[in-house]
Length: 116
View 1 (spheres, rainbow, N blue to C red):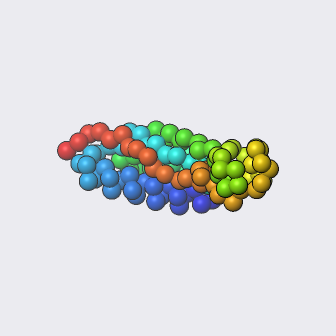
View 2 (view 1 turned 30 degrees about the vertical axis):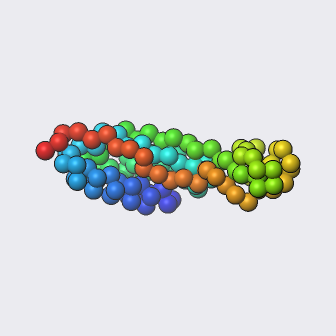
């Protein structure tokens, strides 16, 4: 389950940011996870509960925004959301090799409190 190591790395970033800001509590973390990132949101939530134990992020809320897959067709120069794993343009039926979004794994914001 790579979600545990992913969440450990994310928590390290959040803790470092909280330390730099002088915060003693992390209340909320927001993440963007692409549908094709290989990350299972439920497993990430479980990992979050485990890795935050005993930290200033214990009890924090994890918000996960799912990012849909969007491809770009270089043939007809259109963006589209593929209906399946075959990235075929619905306009010209050419297969796209360029994914614009859907692979993101991003920590987008933190809500901090209890500043020193």
